[in-house]
Image (cartoon, rainbow, N blue to C red; front, side):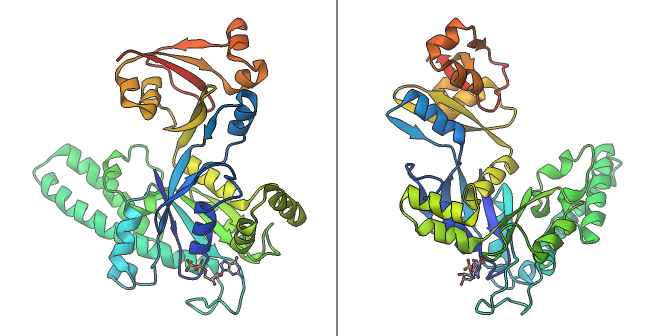
Length: 360
Ligand code: GDP
């Protein structure tokens, strides 16, 4: 699962990407890796993993991770090939969710492409390009559906109606995600860019971490969108990242009145935006957080660990995170009747601590 960082040039995308993929602050003892210069594997901060580690004292602890991609090169006209144009748009197509960075800081040393700070204009510029590309995609689909519908195919007619609804919605300057339709299964395969879930990240100056006039503008503008928003100062995050010792970071965060680095909030939001949740395996050798799609059944969760676990799935022995912490040992959980034996139709809950039984 991948989240892509998008936005106009000079809004702080790369600064944010570096903080996310290099984030010592959120992953002091955990390894991170940069897959390619613009793709980072980012650990998902999770206090529960630290609590379980303290409780079990395993040889190693492995956090869940997601991929973040820094997508550079969007300028006005990208959908018509300006800047990196279509390259940029196809990079977006490959992501599952978008982190849209908006410049909400003033700094005369950092040029703005339009010469004026206006996050709403910036947001619209980026979205306009994505919308134009979506209209192109929908147009093609309309043409092929019209041909099929002309022979009286009822399904094609129905689909055509839905496609037209999206077409008209996007033509009026809106994004596909804000159109609520009961059954939109016919557009799922089209991979529309503006249907992807989005997190707006307002990049503010060091003195505005609780918000400023620009973040207020953004907040108002997304009221009717299916979208989330976070405020961050990429400059502060970069400073946090410079500090090597855990104590120095703690002190610095306290000084500026932050409980945790802003990147943690962004990673957590992106994780939830991607529709993901966590289950744990917990033994003396290793405590580990694993990522699954919300709603996954026990065998699918087992398959994330190893395909053999899924093929040979017999049952899952499940302890809720709260019980695992409350009763401290697996034995105590057993004696208290807190281990439930679940079959292949069990829907895994966020935080479940699971031991799979399987047969190869
Ligand atoms: P990108 O083009 O969107 O990837 O933007 P960059 O991350 O390369 O940042 C462009 C310039 O803005 C760099 O010189 C950064 O140091 C600067 N910058 C990024 N975030 C902030 C911020 O929060 N405050 C200030 N003052 N400068 C920033």
